[in-house]
Length: 139
Image 1 (cartoon, rainbow, N blue to C red):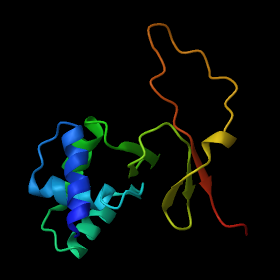
Image 2: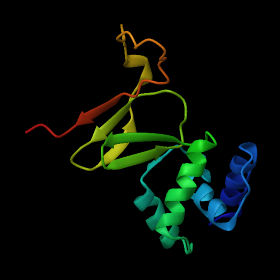
Image 3: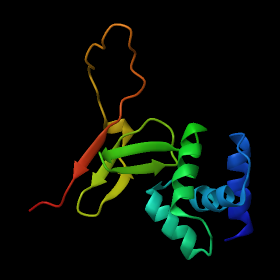
Image 4: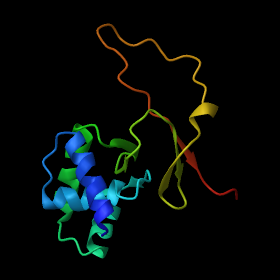
């Protein structure tokens, strides 16, 4: 891992007020070290950490991703009941889920139009609206 990637990860954690433990630094550098947004699963991040010589358990990856979400550093995107992706772009935007590849990518926000949402029950408010557009190759 490059020093610049670790520096970027360290700043990302510091800006959110998170203590930079060794495991958090490793995962932060993988997530944002190159300055690019990405969508990861806990398993793919665990594999990337292993491939880069990191010694972190899968349970630690899950716990760290949860801490990053709680701190507002990541957005969790659930594509079905059993699989979550974690997005470094925390601004509201839609996603494409490529079913054939089990891959999540950003969809163009400027092309999305939601003209009306249903009325919410009394005493409730809308916290967010998640848009995941499932794609597959034409048959």
